Length: 167
Image (cartoon, rainbow, N blue to C red; front, side, top):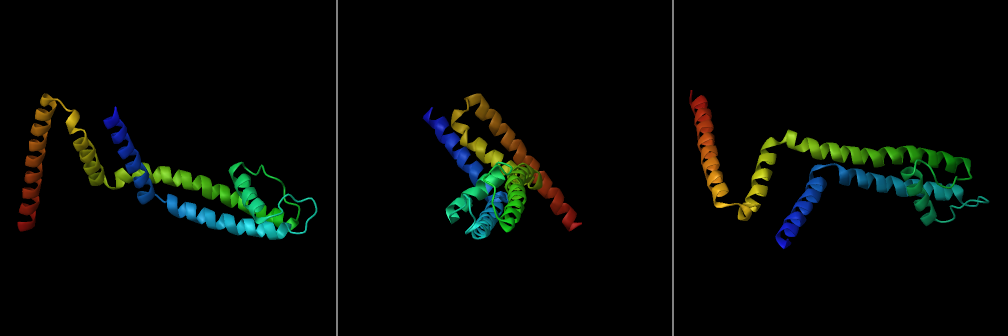
């Protein structure tokens, strides 16, 4: 049970590392945070001095920014005309960036093996090598035969490529 948990933990770490390294999630998140802080500042300054506003601090403006785009605009309504405009632009832009980041990340993650099949093969081999301790003697023998066949195939492919280059 402990070995399976360690394997699961390794695989989970590898998944998150793959997502961070091979998808646009960090760029999109960084852009979203930068724009969120800018729009929150604009909203806060636009609402300063307005009677009846609930956006009385920069922290509340930041909260409004998250509530507005993540719940399709269900947040307290700004009172000032410029604040309403800033908030409207933020809701549209923030929603596009937030949900766009999710879609782009998922798409990039699942399209990556198609773009680099050799990397997928290597990852699969590495994963399977981690599982060797769990194989029976018969399975290990089959693995040996398969590996030998693969090596022979690679040697033939290399020889053909070398032959083509020499011709």
